[in-house]
Image (tube, rainbow, N blue to C red; front, side, top):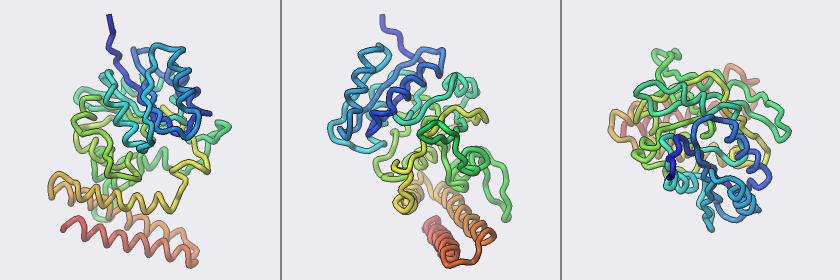
Length: 301
C-alpha cells in the first residue's frame, strides 16, 4: 500500500554536485511528518545526476527527474511539481539547507484558510559562516505599504511585496500544492526574479502566514546566478514590467504599480540621504527616479 506523503520537497539541481548531498540531508532533519524528495537535475553541467541517483539508491523517499537540456529554475521547479504528490510543497535550491525542524515550523505557522507560510533565513558562506546581509532577511521581510509618504505595516499582499521588492529564497516558503497548481506554477516569462513574480501571484491568490523563525541556510557565493548584479537588476526590471502587464485586472495593475513606484522612490530617497554626492551616487539616485517615473506611467496605461 502506497502512503501519500504530507510534504513534497522539490530540489532543482544545476551545477550543485558538491552541495546536493548536504541539501538532501537537511530535509531529513526538517520534519517528523511523512515526506518525499524530488530532485530535478536540470541539464548535465556537472555530476549532479550521478549524485542524485546515488542518493535515490540509498532512500526510497527520493525520486530523480532528469532534464537533459537545462530549462532554468522555473522549468525545473514546475517539472518537480508535476510529479509531486504531497499536500504541501517546498522548493529547495540544491545549494541551500533547511534548518532543524524547519518544515514542522512552517506547518505550525499555517492558520485556517492560509495557503502557506513564509519564514526567515540566514545567509551563509561556503564555510557555513553566517554573513551580514543587512536587513534583507529581517526588517525588509516585514510587509509594508506607503501611505502619505510613510511606511505603514501591511498584510502580505502584492503591493507590500513590490514595495519592499525582496523575497526570501524559495526554500523558506511552504505552500499548498493545490494552490500552486491553480496558479500554474512558476512563470516561464520571468527569466530573472522568477521567485518575486511567483510570490506576487501567490499572495494575490491567498493569505500566507509569517514566522519570525529562521528556517533556511541560504548559501551566498561570488559565482552564483544571483551574484550577477547588473544582469539581476535589469532582469528584475523586465520581470516587473511583466508583473504589471500580467495583472488580472486594472485595479490589480494599479496596486502592483503603486508598490513598484514607491519602492524606487524610497530607494532614491535612501541613496540620497546616505550618499557622499559622488557621481556613482547621483547615477543610482537618477536611475531610481527614472524607474519610478516609468512604472508610474505603466501602472495606468
